[in-house]
Image 1 (cartoon, rainbow, N blue to C red):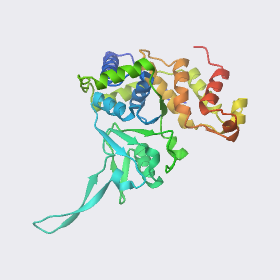
Image 2 (cartoon, rainbow, N blue to C red; image 1 turned 90 degrees about the vertical axis):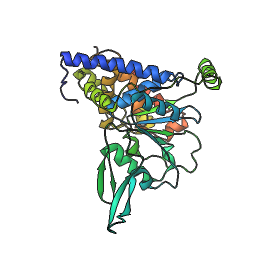
Image 3 (cartoon, rainbow, N blue to C red; image 1 turned 45 degrees about the vertical axis):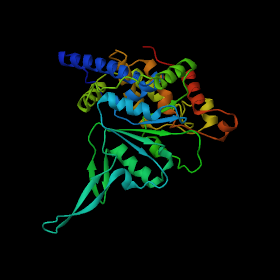
Length: 341
């Protein structure tokens, strides 16, 4: 499933790994100055950045989605822009547009491209399901190709480039549900839930007192993140673990021999091979974040739900029996035998 590992235990690699661990620790410390709780969500966002993917964040209004992304971008030392998606948003509002400029001395007119908000490192696409399909398609090209096309001209986006998109699970009237092809481009679908009572008290005390929270400072650069992405892909993953990831994804497809009865009964469509590649790569990043230089079964299991939940489509039987996608995925994890490590 994956190419042979290029991991080499050299002095240079050890220095890179040490810098990686130090940076992750400092980034987490900076984020916790502002964000209370949500440790798993922060971990998934960091994994998204280390893999070079994109993340869909589903959460109720007021759960600090925007604040979380802005804080993380600042700690990473990356440029940040936010787009509030609305029904009247046009593709050029996102990508940028050509304008005619006239030289006052010669009267000569030329087309000049004015960059849109897509030209950044971290893009927060707020309420991405509220914009029409044409604008969603412009975002899709940027996510997949790392480029935008305006009037037949293609402009490349500078790495690293991440889309962290949010959507609310309520107020669905007037929305344009994301097509499966676009959902499949997101590495994770992370659910941002309410805080516990003690954590909520800490938020109130932190943001309503006389002393403002400490300022977040950048601890890495764009070049560091690109180097970390290359380091992550060198982490070894055994053929057994790769095969386990393949079997988990194939088990989500109703027509596959590996599908369990719940999948045959409750699922219309399963996940694609892109999900398998994402699981393997994200598992490498999680292993390295946890101080390991090899991928374990636990890495695959912990990442399966957020990677697969937006790629598996349940049917009306599941709706009738109140069975969610997460219920189906948990059942697969219970019944699929894990390999011995």
